[in-house]
Image 1: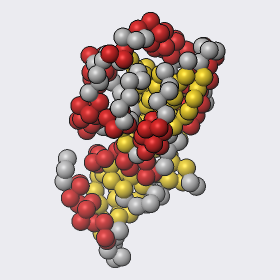
Image 2 (image 1 turned 180 degrees about the vertical axis):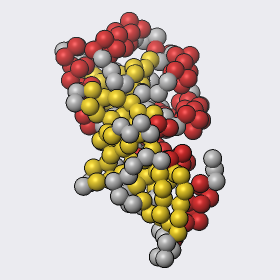
Image 3 (image 1 turned 135 degrees about the vertical axis):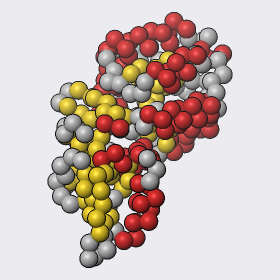
Length: 253
């Protein structure tokens, strides 16, 4: 039995692969893919996998784009940190999911379900494009979550709970409104794609949550200096070029 994993978090992909092969030694991990683009390219030429484990939110888009683009009859088990709204839709359309952080039990249950219903699953036609639209709509409503790492634990932190992201020594950090600090295993550009209208890229170092902005003051250099409701490691400024875009964004409360 051959499995393909689509996951842009290297640690998560590695742990999932190890968990699968430890629980089911007969399974071979054929490929680990990290992007929508690479997945479309691979699955366009190789459809020999029996089962796919796929994250939903990848660095370059939603994984639904892959399955809407490439016609495959390979069942997909989605791995997600999102709530039951989208998950109920998954169930209604005849495929499975596991919640992050996954456990031995959840992975085992998903694979055993596939084994039990193998053959019948392929008969279902999954409307991936519709699911992409549903998930995008829901993501805009609740803003989703970002995964952070605490020793051997992977924890989802809801985006509305995050005051800002900041880049320090090449590492992306986040601070919540409760003054909790975490390290994020993504680039600022990747974070910018998933935070959409809720956060603004103030400068190279900072992505700020609209709800964290207390006020903005101008300086002699014509930059804006932001005051946030939580402590920041350094002054947050907006360049003159970005001011119109920032002020428009700020009014979208």
